[in-house]
Amino acid sequence: PLMFVVGVYGMNFENMPELKMEYSYYVCLGAMAFMFLLMVAWVRIFL
Image (spheres, rainbow, N blue to C red):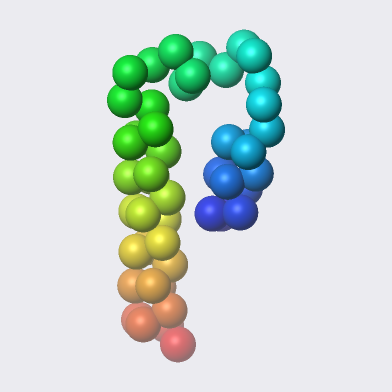
């Protein structure tokens, strides 16, 4: 999941609404951190 998010944000699109939002960078970082913590929790619980 993180590679998908990073891949999408690594592309240079001109018409991404996220580029014009004020806090979109922090929202993206927060979403990636949340996914990372979710994967760590999943590994600790099920493996």
